[in-house]
Length: 116
Length: 149
View (tube, rainbow over the protein chains, first blue to last red):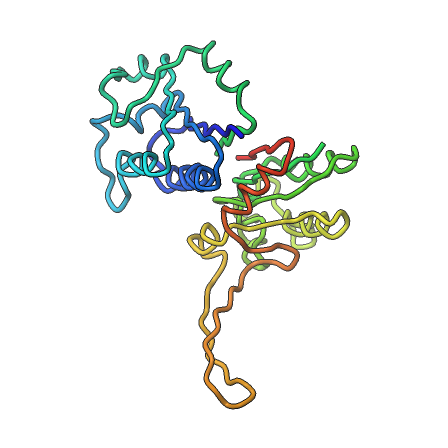
């Protein structure tokens, strides 16, 4: 069963991000095939220059946990990367950049999309 | 069709038409099955026992909820009752927000032995308390799972 976690909010609420990821990690632990898609401002979660917020876990740390749960399919919106001037080859974790059309195809392949 | 819902928004951030509730009521009226409603993140406020939930709704509501009006949690509980819907509040999210409170009690057993028990309060009757496993179970067992944020 394919599950996609869609993240489209800026990296300003890291407890929200943690909760989103926990849902994805738990789903993977129960055997669902989980992937992540970052669109719009959310691409900045993968920005290597993202400053550390006090008292919050940096997104790059949380994203390292994906590998532990064998979640390897991480996608970012091409348009979002361009708007936020990020290089798809220089993100904190490996991610595949997708066009709008490819995003449409990805979404249609999922059994469930979680959009928190 | 079998649906599950994941509610991520608190009552105060929903529109006056209370979209998740309206969606649940509509799908049940149309004869679909509602397998589970899982309250996650700020959605746990929907399952708070009053007066916590009603004060939160009043503070956020644009329409100004009067004490006599039915709160969102009242309506969810009524739905659970009338249609036997499984309402589950995520324990971690609820504890983190102070919606649920964990207290350790020391009691005496019948033969005067000290016993420690953990009690969770703050969640309204009609709502179960569980973990993300219940969310995944809902996703796996439903034709469609819809998130409300």
